[in-house]
Amino acid sequence: MTHTPTSPPAGWYPAPDGSSELRWWDGAQWGPAQPQAAQPHAQPQPIYLADPGPAATNAIARLAVAVQVLLVVSAVMCIVTIGVEVFGIVAVTDFLGGDDANLDRFDVYDLATAVVSIAGPVFLLTAGVLWVIWQYRVAKQVRGLTRRVPGWQAGAWFVPIICLWFPYQNISDLWRAVGRTRPSWQIAWWLLWVVSNFVSTQATRIYLGAEDLETLRVAMWVNLAAEVLLLAAAPLAWLVIRGITEGISQRAANPVPAPVG
Image: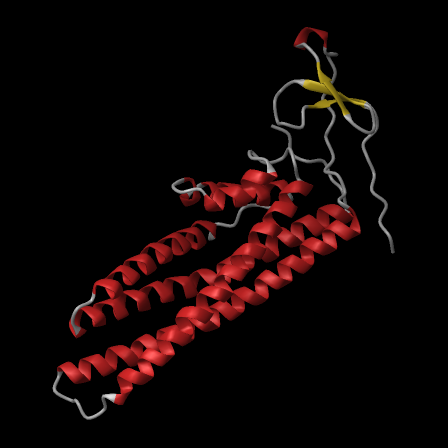
């Protein structure tokens, strides 16, 4: 069954940018802002979130599924990497303890590390790219209901310093814009993501500067911690994608007044 998009009738409505002024909606587009003195003293009418149509909604849903699948794959890669690091830690510990009978374990560790250090980031990076596209498209459907435009919803992930907090705010805005309450666990997802990236960076630095097996073992432990944090963040990220996508789909099927102010 095809859903036909509807628009609110012509009249004075609160400005779509969230300000307190009223603007004229002619049924198709917004008119210029009027001075407060010239605006009618009438009860503001609600603005309805525009129905993006089935094509846009389905595209967002498909992107969401792709990101969710890649998040699951990335979580599996985290588990594999944790196993590789545990294997390496045991091999180094045994060697430092005087057991040098199984030196071939270092070759196995090196090979396994080469595989996971390429495959893991590739899956995670692909998930990240699709996430940004998904977030941009969702933000376009709720334009005017978030504190930042769709371009900043996507771009904030790539700007140093800003990327530590703006994406969290942007996701919070999307929850509200699609008519859902921001979940209490969202802050846990964000902290796990940020800290895992920081710890992973430190692990890489230790690996690159390692000159002995003891330092290499420290790097293994640090990288193992980073993977555990990332593994914990993955299911929460999966829930973020699912919740907001369900919200935008419900809004598209049943347009309701968007919150004002």
